[in-house]
Image 1 (cartoon, rainbow over the protein chains, first blue to last red):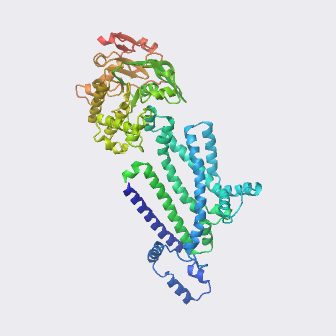
Image 2 (cartoon, rainbow over the protein chains, first blue to last red):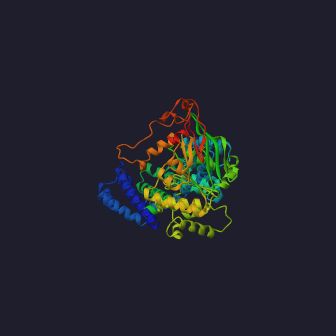
Image 3 (cartoon, each protein chain N blue to C red):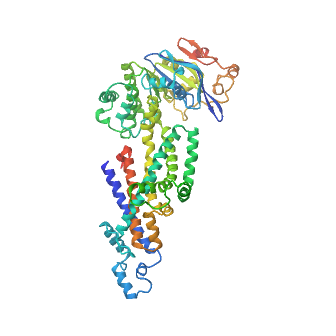
Length: 313
Length: 322
């Protein structure tokens, strides 16, 4: 089991290294000279060359990548071109807002979606199943920004129950209140995804031979569903949630813009539009790492549940 | 001890009503092993599922009775049936590779099915360990912690047998338990099953399409064809004095009985009739080479033409001598 864990974590590290190298190369393919961006268009060629050497841009690309990775490995993400501030500070100021948003979004989606999927599977083709099916597909079909806009209109503008924008004035309860609508918008589609996936995998497991064995031994239906079926059916769901958290970390940007919330998505968006490359690199790098971390954690959870995974590799 | 009488089961499908079992009679005396033979689709599995009350949702028992230990299983509620399953009647399934839950240890599954017993976890484990060693699993204490994928197919089938016999049931239903295993393993499992049956004194309903296994293991044989029991009797009668043309054909097709060298294996020409639109007469008439006029017109009745030997054929009795 430990061997499997070690291998999986090593694989995660390799994925991050590859992603960082690709990212670094791609940034350099984007039109626009970072030196000119920093110094402005009227700087003398001597000064430009001096800064270019200082930033290490004269080295061949592979050398630059290795140097960059080396720097990142020591925990230094570089310096913001405009604000002269450490990218670490900027990214880690914004990151918690996104993490809270994503976790609460996925969290409520799990709390609603998984039981909904279970109910649909247990009472398949019943009224409950059909209603849940229509709701799930609707949830998936509506784009997040539409949910965000209309929930602001309904709950903030018309009903005035909840605040429309921002992340609160710093105290805890205000932060939570400001989190409700964005988390709702982010999670709604995932309610549908999870409900559909849980239903499908429960039905698949329920038709497997070992469930018939459990029935033939007279096990109570509750034991069969929660111990014999759900344990297997939850595996693909865990994988989906791991990926969902990773995807949302970067795609939460729509929600963050609609609700004018601070966050990593918004940070990347602003940094790209202003060609602030160190910030782009730093924040994309952090989301990549978090993506790999969340999918790896999902794999490790699966290995804890499924002995075939941890014995095989 | 188990007596099925005139059981009729139908499946409602888009194509129409499949009359899957028609007037099925069967008897499993206490302490005996009854073999059920028949090609796939003859209703063997439907019959088993009717006994344990696990028929598919689109299936319904139209008439008949299944008497087990003095009461009719068909009159029992799902709850009452659940109390019988795994205690008085237990099952061993065909495919040992998929019959056990892959994410629960053998020990967890073997102790879970003892949930009705008011004994401690340690005692339940002890019982499972004893049972595993009885079916020939080496080092059962440690193996209890293992998961199904850590066992070979033959081992898994032994575990399935251990699970089924653990509660000392009165009736064990074995649905082709050796079909998925290779020949040497098959013999081992059969012998093990027979030993256990004798020491525990339970009855076995043994479903197989392997005639050799049936002949070796069983006391009585039931031959099924197209949803009907066409012949039943003692293993000696069925193998030496078969009365139904289908049984005769079936025995002729058994490769173990073929004496001279042939290029092609003998088969029974024709197909099983459509169970939605049944022929008016005998179900086997189309494939029978002794078919006469009455066979096309009238459904034959099951007749006991010799002691403990029944056949569902217009010619039964007259054929055994020829």
